[in-house]
Length: 144
Image (cartoon, rainbow, N blue to C red):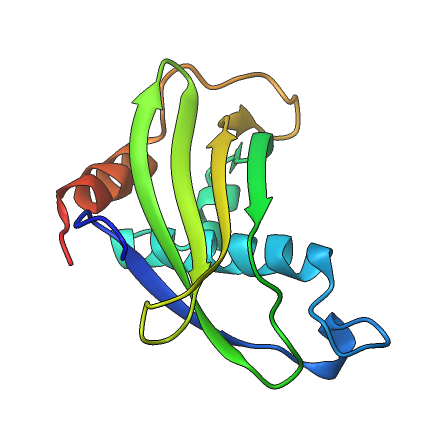
């Protein structure tokens, strides 16, 4: 069972183009779902990713630790659970799990670190844009 922490849910369904010849979800599909879920997580925190980009900020993943635990098959539904864990200096740390809709099975687990960069120079933003800081604060305060 998942720990009782502030998780946000993003439903997914395995589509044909996300599978290999055997109908098993391709490993890269999980990473695409994680990105979709993080963008949705920020939206739920109060900022659209497009608005963040318009502010001159990008959030590339600089570290990813992933564990594939059980394969998803074509047509299956799952839930990507995302939570903002903490800020470590300039790194924004997220946990993301892909689980069954009833939360009884864990298919995939990942821990990610993102770093805010100034667009287009690529320089690290040591002070977060206020809307991003507010969204992360809100996400850290939410509970299931």
